[in-house]
Image (tube, rainbow over all chains, first blue to last red; front, side, top):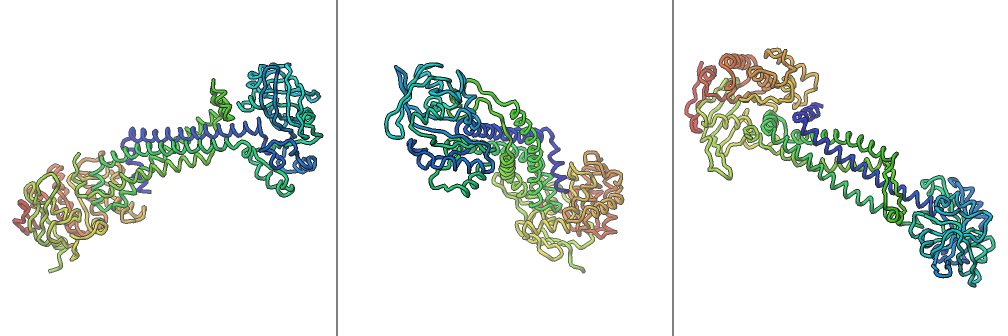
Length: 408
Length: 231
């Protein structure tokens, strides 16, 4: 306690210098907490977007369907699976889909697309597709031969609400099937790919076109949260004969989001180390100055019996005390700023297309993750303490007689 | 005759650095000091008084020769052993008092006891007793800049003797004090020497302070030129 008291008193000798150092630590740490909060908020939003708008939490197909999109790879024992899945824990709801590669065309233009047949009543319970319809209307439960197209595809085809298009695909029997459909809505999904390369029609229309009875290709399942996925998968493995099925999580279907998250984390860790080194050098400067100014005093302390190890401990303690004050202030400031932007959000304008390519939203709500705050604090304290060893070691190596007669 | 507490044998100290020419501070100096002596090292500036004190006080090591403390050669001990010696057996009084400015007078005095690992309550008690004896009991909460020179020197002396060292070394310890305060301090040290049997060795060039010593060792140009016992 005596050494700690001495360390605090020493720091207080030059309050302005100590305050500036503490402020540097606090601002650096607050910036790191905010940066993590920004990154975590962005990535969480991306993951949410993927699940809410595109994939659901989990999808089940027949093995090989996701790669080949072969129309004959329908889900075996569809009703049995649906019943088993619905009885699993964490399941909120599910919906069925039919998917096929198709050609959509007008009299002037045609494009290859992914045709997705959805249940107009159940699909909006799993995927927020209704909100993606920015012009026209969502598919009608009773309507037939209606189609939703992405705005980019609509532009390329030159079609508008109410226009007729022809959709052709290979039916399950290998024949070429095609019908005329009417454009009911224009989608802005937030994904450039989906807006250009996908179309939605009713499940019934898709089944008719492909020559399917009631069969479907895909089950899309919504769980209570993403955190429930591992538990759900474990439960499914126990109740479902997995052999003919492919159970894919949102991350299996769109792995780029988690790859992006890893990349962002690597960048932030690089910034974290860089910032902490800069802060550490600042602290070292303060301590070096402080030691230099006290050379004679430290010499006297050694002369009257203070060991080099005690001098080193004292100087390291001074470094640690400075860090602690900075860390407390930094955590408070970092939390407050991150909390504030977690409520009001950070809005980005004019970047919709670039952001949508990576499933990002134009609003980011920052998020504080305890693990990242702790990592930042530990890195900061570890790096700055390591740097602080140098002035402490130098002080401990002083020759008392030289230090006592040291002149400035 | 008892074994000497300090024995200096043929000590030579040469200061060398990379810039200037070597400086011979002490040349072949030898003497012995018995326990309980009150010794003045005197001589003009640059005669080697402070260098000799530093060698006896385990702060420096001789270029040649040996220093013995209680029969043990200390001139070749390692840093750790020297620190232990200084802490347990030696007290220092510096010309500029050199109290730790951030600590109160009481904390400065108990600092050495803290280094020795004495528990807080015990060291506080001992420090208060010594402050009472040194007439600074009412000043214990003041920090050095709030004390007069005389009060600072008393606190420095208290710090030097609180752990009951075998010898106390002083370097021009009255140089910054007025005549009256200097005389009072020397009387006080003499009293400690008599009552506690602490050996005092101090460097001075003040004849009045010299006159209080029981023995005067005179140095000139790093050589011992006179060793006089006075009664």
